[in-house]
Length: 305
Image (cartoon, rainbow, N blue to C red; front, side, top):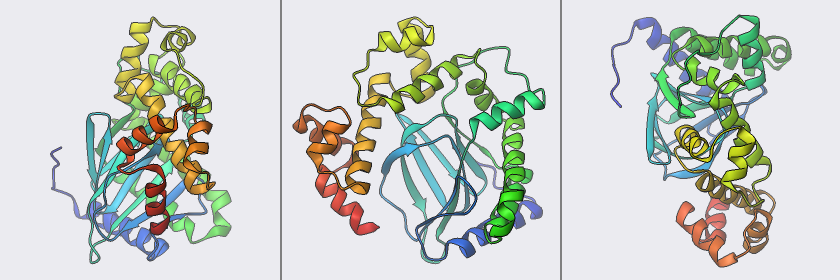
């Protein structure tokens, strides 16, 4: 991905302010959840190995450093000049590719409130796109100054907890409005308008998330979405860069990893909980995705925490 490195002095000042605010709030920790709903901060002192997880609908900004995100066969790279947005929950692989002790990676992630975004469209008469175009559920764009400024004000609130309840909702609403008016607006409008294929795929993904341990028939998913099997498959792949069955497999494996790490389940129990009948098949597919057998991977993750 090519980027234009020319920036105004005001934009550079905003970048410096954003990274400074993140650095002051996170200290030396790798991750913190702020008092602002859905807003987390991240710091890495060196490049990382690829890491697989489920990324909720979110906007991600970087104050300093560079990051690479894989979705299926697609690759997205962003930095302090660009933001990444996901409009649906997706199984991604991420990797910090620029960080050092002197200039650590400093980033933030804020989950999107799709109901609020839909209401903003109604209140501000933002019409859905008349022409339906299949869009991937993830994208990268240059950070406009007004969006960067809004995030700086939101981060400033994190150190003023007494003001968060009153002011954070207003700034979050401003951020969502700025996104709707940005070149990523069509991506959001596609999954918040019930007349759009993207909305139907987003609903399907939500159902799969709540029922990931159940067997899935693509025919049933297509029928529930009001599409033919071929149309559903094409629209699903356009948004997620993978087939429904591949999506379910990655969702199951990520949930199993969470169960073993957070709830201390053993591998066979976690496999059963997410819908696997064969522990050996689970172990093979887990190793293929995460690079190590289940218990070895969990030991390595536990040592990092």
